[in-house]
Image 1 (cartoon, one colour):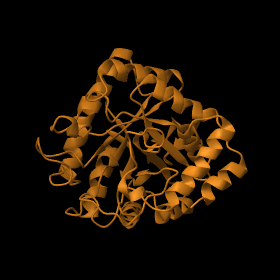
Image 2 (image 1 turned 90 degrees about the horizontal axis):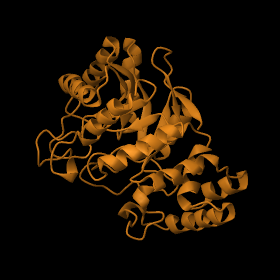
Image 3 (image 1 turned 45 degrees about the vertical axis):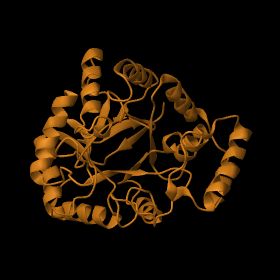
Length: 329
């Protein structure tokens, strides 16, 4: 396993594995025995960076979530896990009532919600301190200043370490970081967005992102990351597009339906054949070996899936292969 530093403050920065494990469906669609087996194998392989959220996975039973955090708490206690494992969680997108969703009834990012939701996450996880806490989705009903100060209070109190942000417009991320810097407060240092080899259209809208998908890593976000490579780290969720690269029963989402997709898939398949690796492994190796500090965040519903992902750590693409993958469009 290889490791990368996230965070700049010596009091809070952490060394994390370059491949993060997504625990979104642990405790819901992925049963406890399987979840524990995947977690155990990940740690055995040197992994120490696990991702969850307070709303995972509310859509599986029409509830409010908490399944994943609760399972991770049980796993930690049963294995005697301490602060050697970095667990990241998120708040802001938990439905306020069963039968609703983060689209029409989210908890939001008020100072009150930040404090209360973070406390519930600490209880479910069984930790005194949240290693990394993300603002999960935007809340434009609350002033950015209030959100910034709400997160900073928890850092000052020692119940939160690093701060992150996900699925926000880049201008709002920068405004939040600027407000924090001006006030001498901790700001967002880890950015979690969807990123993969295939590129989605940015103009496809949905209920969550009416202005276009704010969850995708577009050109503006990549430019922002390149401008501050020491201060910001991208954690790339859904790098394998929920199995769409390899599974016939997992079609690509509609926003990938454009002429560039077949071209990139053609090169991807060629590189996979040249290396003897799977398509998924090539995608992960492409992210891991890039010029930006990207940490792929890949889920696994079985130990065999995890093993496939772990093997990508040993795959080194040539410069020619990387250039071809980057240039295809």
